[in-house]
Length: 421
Image (tube, rainbow, N blue to C red; front, side):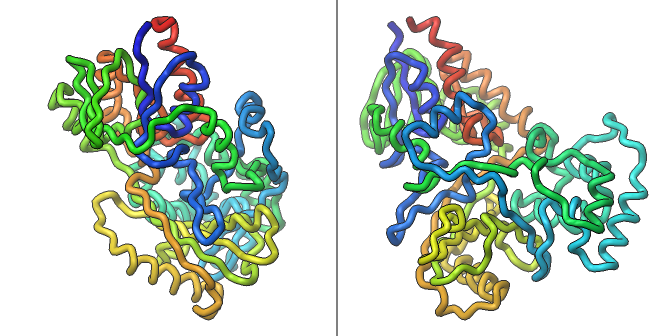
């Protein structure tokens, strides 16, 4: 029987473990869950950015909702903030909330859209302009992309769009210029969220039943001798590895990987995430989350976990900020700037904030740029030829949601299990 090692106790590692009969899991952190983990600060749980479950996969929902208490929100409340004014979500279907001049510019821009020609769409910017026109593209999506992805819309590919952005509907855009539109056709029109333990509450019981070796960060993998060396000095042998180690890091871990493939890994991009956690004694907005389109404010999104549970004693809000991976962040300075912007945005006094904490992630979101596939595929293929199977958001360097991450591990374990048993 092959010695199969799972590296990474995130959702893809959980998926792999749930399919396999025998395995060993090694995790670099002192806790499981990966990006889905919820950190306890000030007796509250804080996620690594806005996390909800909006999966339509019934098998996955049956798995994570079993034996836990959860909220099933059927009418998601989310909005956009545009220079102090609230504009309905999505922007293009709520032009009624814009000033008269902006509304006219948006509709005139929409009128100028030429016939949709799929062959002319080469990147995200092309798609936006062909879908919503120049005004909405330039004043909203371009601004938010620079804040959230830290790049231009023209640098992003199209392979991440499916199921994420609403397909253009000219009639809805025009109607939304005059009357309120419902959100029932949006990606997040309904969702699930645990009543306890933050987003990680979906997975806590599943990980507790798994044997996981924590504090085992991989230092080197020797493909020739099939040995994994961890930074704590432990060495283990393997036959096959299911790995969610960030693909970008694998070039420095696997010595035998060809230099030409390692060079491509340097081109992979991600954002750094800084999450500023605040509590107040009163509610300042009713929405579950808010997108911020103001160019002069670095905060991309506000996420309130207390609005999911209707907590009336503490208002819990997280400020999301993202940076290019090459940016050197002065965390304390960025936190202060973000809080000052937040206070000004909601016309608050600083002493109304009762608690300030933060989370930082070196890799927050994978950037789906035009070179992502050509830079990632050679390494993924080479590693698989050498019995290292990459899974998950960071492992395959692909922007995916939680259910997709779980299934990535499950399906990979399914794929290789015939050679094990």
